[in-house]
Length: 596
Image (cartoon, rainbow, N blue to C red; front, side, top):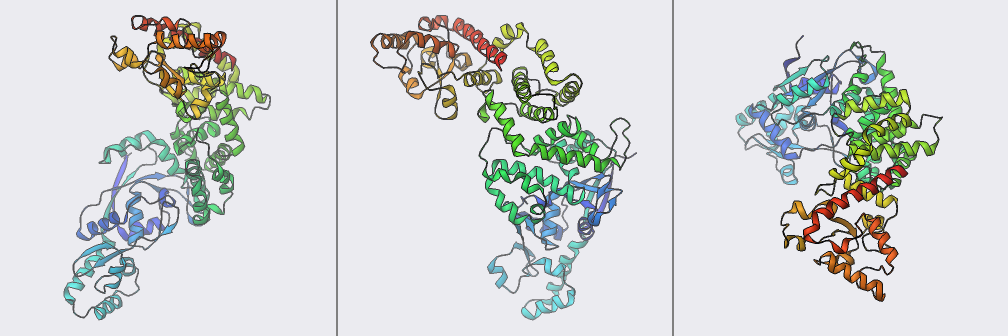
């Protein structure tokens, strides 16, 4: 069977097919990103007979059309959405959605004497030689009356030139636009590969994009579910947009979904601001036990995962599952409680979480475990917390994560989350991991390394203090003002045989400290600044930090995983210092993990 077909459609027929829903444009209710200049240029290209590129559609089975009918086949537009929207605006005179979700007009004017297109301005509107809005001509009941009125306003223009160019303008409606239609039995990966090869920009089309497009084909319900995902993600980062959405998207505002996310208008949390691809993935795990976004497309198409055959009776059931999953995901109680679990593990800022996939799976796991009535809330939180930290330390969700997700969900369902987690811990977090693998992983200059960030999370969770600080915690320094300090100063190392950043910027040479302490240490070697601390312990006169008790100093060094003999560390013993500190950091992380 052919993978695709190539056809030509006139602009007028294309707009008719869009209006009747035979071609679905999932983006219609999202902000239009083209400016009016691009719309003008598109009209000019069609007028001059220039090519405007192919549109790419994908056949969708079982889509709901307007009026509730079910289409045997509907084409989903996957490339060309901005061009179609521009045609609807300029030719059909339909409004577009701006970045504030307001319905606005983009009006294109045409001068039939000079053959110029332009965005309508007050000056052009006052100039009788211009047709101020070409959509008025395309939608007029009588082109003869339109022409006669124009000539009456412009008695001095050359009538023949006007009529010739007006005829050319009218032909825009008959201009042919190529459509590449991809077959409905192609999987998402194949469609994406074809898309990349056809698309001259080489822009990849993710499986989450396909899922969002597919969701929107299921009538009003599908469009609103897609908007639920879009708006949830948008409001998570821009709460002020709530009023715009409520006032300007009346269809969504009338649905029950706006109320489900209205809590975001007062939200300032930024630890986890999921994008639509994240929501799709979490919904796949919660609703379908599937790790691949493409699997959701198959489910929503009624495709049996075993036989690969389509059963349209499965489609409404799949949308029911999707809706239940999404309403769980966007529920304030669930979202807030999940973030409390992650924060209680010490990950209190977005910069500490460099694996969005780890957060996504942990949230899906949290929602799945809420369905287990036999599990106590304490056990549920403990399991999610340990799973999240385990995945940060092992990179479990970094490579081929979709297959791993499906395997993990399946085994969690079969064995129970706690039992399966224990099995993973025995395999991946063995004594060898803590003693060898983790210290080796801390041999890095990356402060966003999951291993260094987990060390900081351990300090936060244990309420440890910053280096040489008596009272200011790592938590406070992470959230407000704290410096990443070189324990063995960079300037000292550069002058004593370590000129490379890869040497002095090792994370094992970093500790969070107060700005005042960092300034006081400056470029002094450990022997010098620790001598100041020793004098401070003897005299009680504060010159570097606020620690005046020897026992408290020892505890502070331990909290920061710094060897007790820091005062003796020189450039000659720097590498040995790094080795010892990595082991101490790994030990702090191990104790922290086992205490979760």
